[in-house]
Amino acid sequence: MLTALLIAMLTAITVWWLLIQRLKDKPWTKQGVIPTSQETVTSSAPKVGLWVFLAVVTSLFGLFSSAYMMRVTGHAGIAIWQPLDEPNILWINTLVLVLASGAMQIARNRIDTDDLTGGRSYFLTAGVLTVVFIAGQMLAWQQARAAGNLGPGSPAYAFFVLLTAAHGLHLLGGLFVLGRTTTRIFRVDANNVVARGRIRMSVQLCTTYWHWLLLIWLGVFALLLST
Image 1 (tube, rainbow, N blue to C red):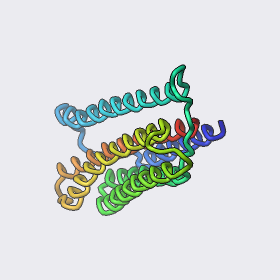
Image 2: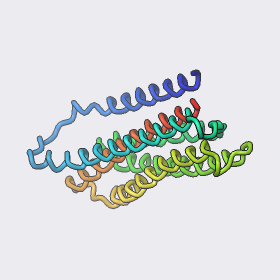
Image 3: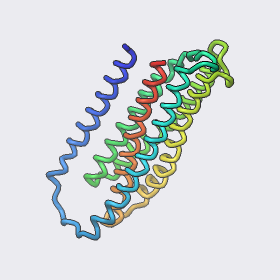
Image 4: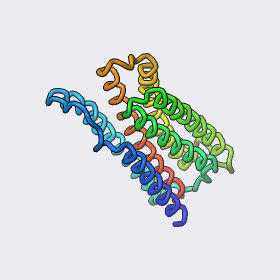
């Protein structure tokens, strides 16, 4: 119960901090040319596509979580669930992912104000922190396997690897997009309004993706700790 409360508090603090960072951007004070209907449709399409994809990802983790809970409770004929002691490094990994998401938000705020130099430094920081998180997850697998007598044949260990690996693979896919966007940020012509607009859109999509995967990880982490 205490662990679930700590995770809930961490989630609330994370969401609050991200909202504060977004409000600091003060989008209502921005001035500029009102986009045409065609531009609005073009810019909205990637956002709609991303949210559809995130809905699919959320459903996938929902199915994994349901299967996990069904196996924990078990039924006649199935071996009793033997809990796995989650490695303490998961707490450090969680903090690293929170920092990565925060760096991504700061990068978005900087780039939204045409501060490409400051934005790309935070964008790169978010990518490096994400790589550190994934490396930490792989280390957690080794520590979990070495703990006690649990191994690849343990359902608890198998689900632990499944949930963390699925989340890590989605982050790896995000890193591919992040790498392409970073390259474009370094090559963009500061006087090219269209190019800056495309980069701004890419950074916004990456930021949303990272925030969402952070929330998914917090949910997965809470599930693992609760059982």
